[in-house]
Image (cartoon, rainbow over the protein chains, first blue to last red):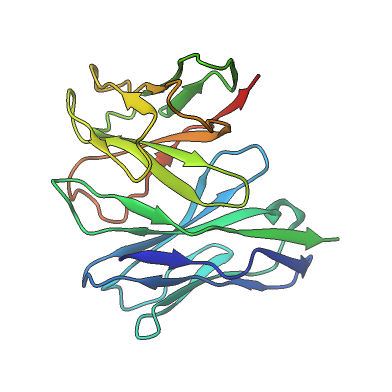
Length: 117
Length: 116
């Protein structure tokens, strides 16, 4: 069965430091996509970054980058130069193979990040 | 601005009562989703719909019902059969089919449901 695993329930990082949030996945599909979302305490889900299974380069979006290691089935999120506003819950998600015309998504249990001043 | 609107933001349910959570989108998306989030857990899929008048059960559909009479709207009813409905509910949408594989789901701001 397809699965997303986030093993870090909580993380602390000092302001301006970099932090890596872990995500491993399990799938038998050749084509898949991995997403990272940020969920502040207010509850909305904010899309951060995407990595496709066939992408040759690791994805980057501003201070966010994805350390994609396909053979190890890991897609870790790296946040550089952490800011106090980065304190939030972070979810890794995978797009499952197309079923009946559309996609389903599975989510990990999340990592709560706290940035310290 | 295009987006997804969920209402109400907070909802209280009495024992034995059905309640309906609203989800409206103006993104012209065909596919819509309902998720349930419990503290310390990820999102679990309740129902999803690809097109009007069609929807499929997700992983935890028992005690919930949906309808999709309009493209813009995908309301979720939490029935009295759902014995533990206290949770945060998120609605999402996406273009139907392959489209741009990089496109993420777009989410509303959520509804927090509690039992009185």
